[in-house]
Image (tube, each protein chain N blue to C red):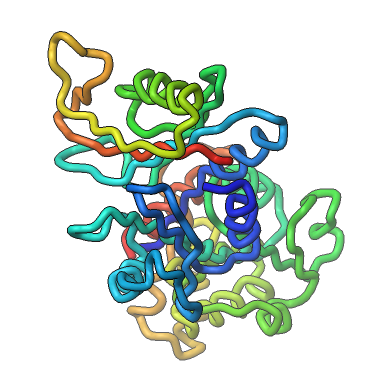
Length: 226
Length: 109
């Protein structure tokens, strides 16, 4: 691989583009594949198979060839509502994982760049904030404020947009009340039951980093279930 | 599949190159049976034998490092190597798990 190509790959990863690297294992030639761009003569004959690997987000050697395909997928978007202490640890853990995190908190004194350096913080109410973020069924929501005024609109948005993971912090009692409010707002039992509440796997921890770890563990586990 | 893991090995490779080191990228390209790391797993090795990342659970890394140093010395662009189930005479370069892996080495130039 050429130095310039390595740079190009890293740039593409940083810009969250989906692409693949195709390599001829015999002669070492490699290039970047993008679905809407044509390939060089070296790989053109295998375009169909490469398209297929890319579609399936698969890595591997194309059968009966010496061509290796490695696909790069967009990181999963994770939205945290509540720029609270636990959120700081979630971000610490998520640094080594491929998640793209945004934080929503309308309370300006929480969502400061000093508390969350290098993070995208949206200092708005959820309904306004979601206008700035493209979300879909590959998005995850972690609601941490346990304030219905802030969490509920975010949860409703996540349910409507069918986020693959929705978790909400709070005790069993808090969660029961939350479920009741969502029911009154017209959400089905199936939708409400899809919310992970109380959030996180049963880890037994109580401190902020321990709770953050249990949330991250649940998020990763749900990510691989999909 | 929505892989949530990115080990940032390529980014590290670039840092090494920009620090004037010679770097070989080792990538798992095929696996058979139970193998410790999935296809696409990576490690990088420089001319001194420093390495980062992994292609197995520690079973074949030492052999990969040797091969990578060899590639740099011979100034070769690429090479494919396969590792099979371990046997008594080569315990440190086999896969105890009973799997097989193919690793592709390529020099970044």
